[in-house]
Image 1 (cartoon, rainbow, N blue to C red):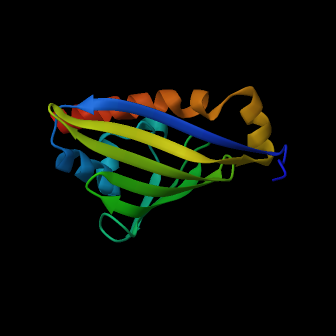
Image 2 (cartoon, rainbow, N blue to C red; image 1 turned 45 degrees about the vertical axis):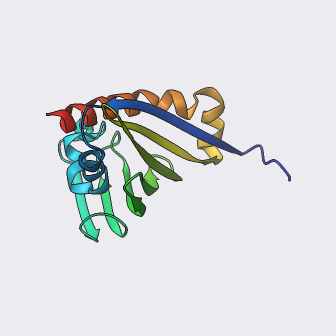
Amino acid sequence: MCHDARMANFRVSRSTSVAADPALVHRLVNDFHEWPAWSPWEGVDPELQRTYSGAEAGVGAHYAWSGNRKAGQGSMEITGSTPERVDVALTVLKPFRSTSVVTFELAATGAGTEVTWVMTGEQKGLAAVLGRVVSMDRLVGKDFERGLAQLKATAEA
């Protein structure tokens, strides 16, 4: 296989334990209408425009956003949903074009739910060049940690 220097694969993963039933955590992740309660990017643009379409929740649910320079523009669609996992196709249009696969893995534990948030994808063009300077893990890892902490607080409330 030929390796293109202008492309780079990435994987970002963070986990937390939530003292709540997996079904509750699943509902918070499986319905984009619930994301404002815990998403780490919610406060970035108070004027953020959101559009919900497709299914109300689960497979086929679609969410698009458009905002200021920090919020950017893009969309998400739930492509898979089981009690143990929610898969999301993420397309970012601004500030950089990218497509990623986002997965929330939910494992029942004695104390509640172990949640693992994973994002995988390929950086191309300018994003790949920047990716050699600052990894995707450094770019979004802290956001994942903040989002999981807010998801935990929301689910445990």
